[in-house]
Length: 192
Length: 361
Image 1 (cartoon, one colour):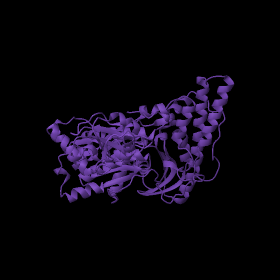
Image 2 (image 1 turned 90 degrees about the vertical axis):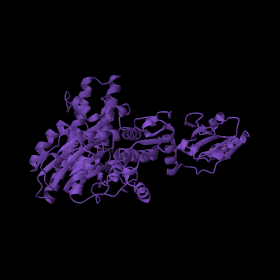
Image 3 (image 1 turned 45 degrees about the vertical axis):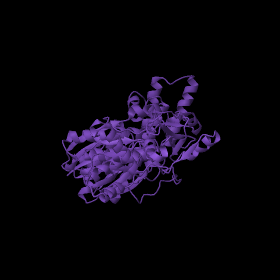
Image 4 (image 1 turned 30 degrees about the vertical axis):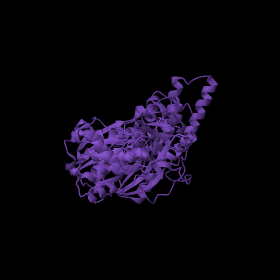
């Protein structure tokens, strides 16, 4: 929260000047996602403004410069530990080609299209060698491996603009996207 | 002064609005009982997920019920520990956000202080007083000297008392939460049919232990089931529940008797024994504490049940008591899984190992 205060101060804005709040909803560390989202839901509630949730994967994919996307699909991929990755494939125009998933890296090979693939995210090294093994052309983008707050705000602003304003966005609470179950008492880790 | 209280330290999501005139303008609690019941205890990740799903909506309802805008508040108090860290974070972050947006003072509150001061929201109780705090996560005897000044006389060296009830109920197949289930079953039972140990009874000091008692019950039940080649009868279940509850209360009374002596010696002005926490709802415990308190020259005060189980009204009230004394916290306040009310209290015997002490200390 001190960082939020510092950002508002650097921007010389009151909370009342905000039109909305954006936050990542995951996938990622459960606790990390909840810390950010609890703060964002609190800010939005207290300021009386809408909250826009964006996924970490779409934020990464849409942060790839157009020149690096051109003629390729974009695979956003984060290390999910336990031998898995969080991943989602997008086309050159940022349209998702499938849902975000938690999966062993090898399964991602089946998502490849006949064009080269651009990789973004901390999980890129976990899949790059698989693509090398089968000789599929791949390319690591210049984007940093984790989303930053400016990219999150930019992605949310793009979603709002595409919808035609905040009022046109879906209503209701913005929930975390875990992709994994709570893992209680030996429960199988399944998609929730 | 009007304060919003937020509580998310365990398996209740709660929000309340309270005034310094002791008026509870809103007091909402969402229990996650159904979500945890299949596991016979609280699952931390399930708790954290439920808190973030419901907390902001609950706060909005509480403010609505109080008929207030956030701008009308004089402060925000949120539980910052001890408790399940992932659960605490949700409430504390939400509280910080509300405080930041409206430039309100934040109180990052110790959940145990909420329990300790809750009685003063409903009754005129002056400092100092003796507190028996008995809940699902805690079992302690404390001298409440003043707001923010506590002396711990004893604590559990293993299970909290509510946790012991939960485990015993699981062994007896009585369901969750265990406290009310055991109390209900014990009503039809005879406490003297089965013998169970009274850990630490008769020993000096005010610490508690329930782990051996729970294990003794488990052995008794297993032996009984094997001898009969099947399940317990309803009668046996009731007698075992009564024996277990009787043993727990014997231990609580024995330790409280020692604490009363210590309290009278250290605080001759003190005249009150307060019992707080969810287990304070146990009628058999209250009935047996009454004569013990009287014999020790103290009056017994038990806040209403809704203030004893986890709630946000006690958090808001403790926030008011702190703000009235000029005490507040920065937006950098950290959530704490472990947080003894008495910073000088030593770890109880047998609990030196790092990571074992848990939120109960």
